[in-house]
Length: 208
Image 1 (spheres, helix red, strand yellow):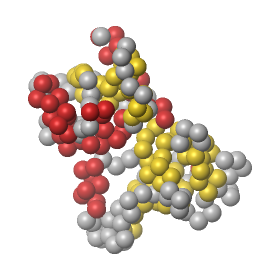
Image 2 (cartoon, one colour; image 1 turned 90 degrees about the horizontal axis):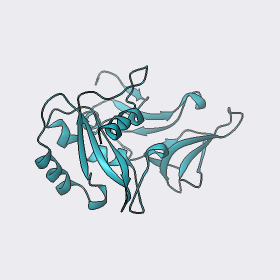
Image 3 (cartoon, rainbow, N blue to C red; image 1 turned 180 degrees about the horizontal axis):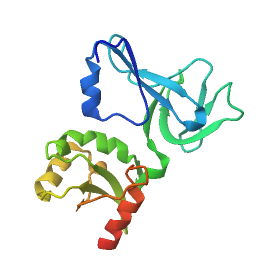
């Protein structure tokens, strides 16, 4: 990779482990933010080389704002109308932003809004040490909390749940701690092979 001067990466968020490998690369590597509706990327983040960036910065001519749910709204001179996304972001005064997660996945547990993607990033190294590659955080209804956090793991191997839950408890703040752990031999996926969180969660609800 170091023989390439500039590299653009887009399509999906990078895992922490991959980002760590790229960070020290000699090439200038940029994460891009965009979608089909924006035609091309509308913001970039430099993650290697000199002057690395901690968040995305909009390209020239792009105007960013948020709706009442903190979801990113995009205005570009080549678009007929604004694009309202479902991506929850932290938007700064200079219009740079941090991607927090999808509004579709936000969990309200005990009155606290929680982004599963944030927790998933924090526990990545713990699960990779157990040879777990596919997992996600979701929620089930709870009489006391409204929604309780759960962790779903795809694995055909046996995993000792008690020490894992203890390790997560020591790693995460209390409000981000999964209350239950479910291990499934196979997750549900869409036709193009992407993880289908809702359909997989439905499997847990049936089992429960």
